Image 1 (cartoon, rainbow, N blue to C red):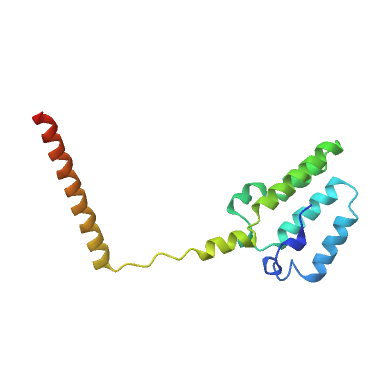
Image 2 (image 1 turned 120 degrees about the horizontal axis):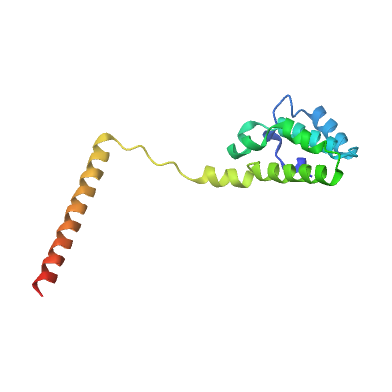
Length: 145
């Protein structure tokens, strides 16, 4: 199952991720005896997370109606497999703290002034003209032989 303890406290919404609701969620998971109850717990866990802790790619997966319908199938193996798939997908969709640090460590590119951008553009154009002249002179040398 999704490890609630592995997710930082700041990942939870203040209301939906309150201490009392987390305790109720744990009891729900511990007392679950069918796939539908586990699917409900998964949906509640997802709802307790702040949206910025979920990957944007999670949105197509996030419909609770589809998850609960799949978990309520009469075939217990298929229902259990659907819950397991959702849990694995949700776990991959959570942006874990290690991933956040990598993004935060990247320094933002400095904003260049109009003059600096113009100077860079002029230098790139000059370099392109020099490269074109070198290539043209190499072609002239090849034609001479």
